Length: 167
Image 1 (tube, rainbow, N blue to C red):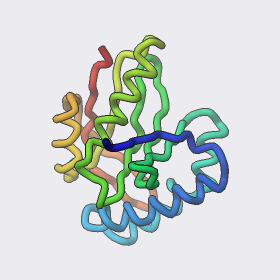
Image 2 (cartoon, rainbow, N blue to C red):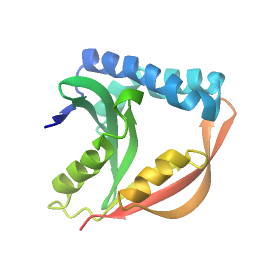
Image 3 (cartoon, one colour):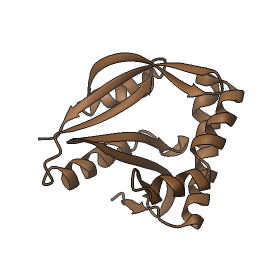
Image 4 (cartoon, rainbow, N blue to C red):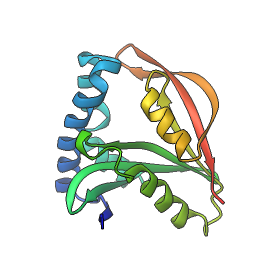
């Protein structure tokens, strides 16, 4: 029986561990999609321990470490907008993909936020990230719009917004 656990990230030590795994995941997955310069920029700007702690302290974001059979294999980050839960990111190490982790993350979010009256989970993905698009479709997400996103450092990305109703 697989054991998947979600542990809230609240300390600087956890944020450092998250940054370490983020670097591995970005280089494994995003290097081909966005290039090394943009990977380095994204890691320094959006996945640094200081940035993560700042996002948590301002109460805008909640980060969770993902453990698969007690091995730290990824993380996800959620925030809110009205009655919508924004799944800002979900990153899983290469060797732990296709093990049902994303499905469990979505199920976890639904179980926590359904009783609180939240009605949708929203996720944005890079248009060329066809693997993520397919995975979210399988989890019941539907495409709602295309848009361009300015990520900084002159990097613009074509993205797709997807949503899943919380029932």
